Length: 281
Image 1 (cartoon, helix red, strand yellow):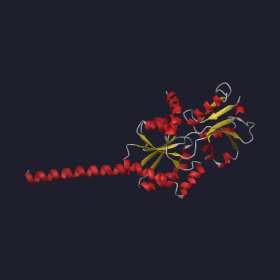
Image 2 (tube, one colour):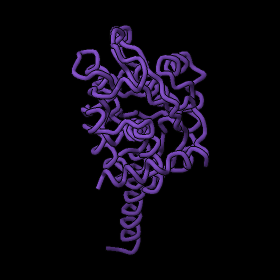
Image 3 (cartoon, rainbow, N blue to C red):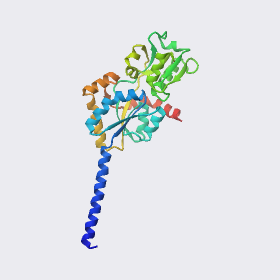
Image 4 (cartoon, one colour):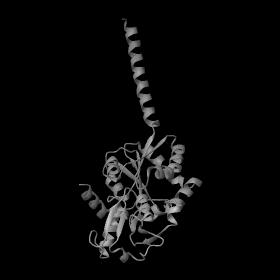
């Protein structure tokens, strides 16, 4: 082979390699972004609720959004910490844990997370003290709603296993449905999760409020995404509230919009992070 032929052959190989690298980079940029949602409700309800957000992100980013959830809270936190999601909507205590594993908290929902108790409309339970001797339904024990409320009840002099019994359900929605069906006398739920329940369920129940106030669910992006892409996600989330579908989303969920995550938020969550780690072990 002449020197000219050899150089031409080598140039073709280099060009092919460059094309393959470019194609690979383009494919990575256009691959669907995996958005993992904490399983606080049924899969169908979560997908239906978050579809307008996914559609807005797809339009703003020019990339498909793959909505995902997990079988249970244990699976969700393990997937989150393993980096299985590009974007995530997760409990505030999970979000702080994930921040140590490569995720960047973008926003929390503006509304406070308000643990509440749900009872059937005709229930004789009027005040929290009436819980004594009753069956309490609750979401998964890893949910911050459950751990914070059990602590709150203990501060009120009501001890789990002695003054009341608990039954754990897979999600807020399942726990609320159990109260309606009479499987439990009273159930724990976030006020926003109750607001997202079907109207046919809400009209059969009423809320007993607590004075617990926590930072709400947070939205994260994994740091493996380019910084410019993460910033585009931030801007897309901010613009969502300016759309008709976004305004409907925040009104119907009770989330009220997005807010920055502050040092005060982290301080409020720290005791529950330690408790969650202990329960996972």
